[in-house]
Image (cartoon, rainbow, N blue to C red):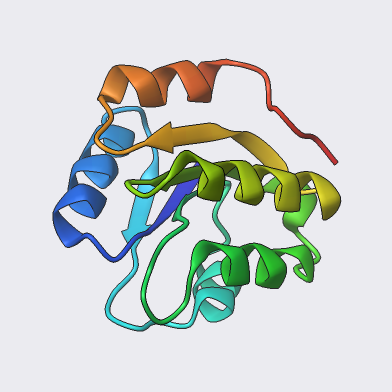
Length: 127
């Protein structure tokens, strides 16, 4: 299993990557302004942890790029944000509209237990 953590907070990305590696995932984190579609295409993740609120390329743009990916039905997404809840709600709606498998949303800060709940539960939206 592979997980891509796409967040502009490097510390949080590393914490998520470590927690996922302990759960058996091979992980990769966003580095700088790395192109999301290229990372997804090359790394072929099974799970994407996606920050909604980032400066240059936000989670909504990432979801639209994922919607065009032929593997989107094989990829689960967890959306996360330290911003307002309505951003996470909008991201969840966009996931449903584009048949993206959304496991759930996480408000920052969150615990590894919060992450475990989403990883072990049913998806909120399934293609």
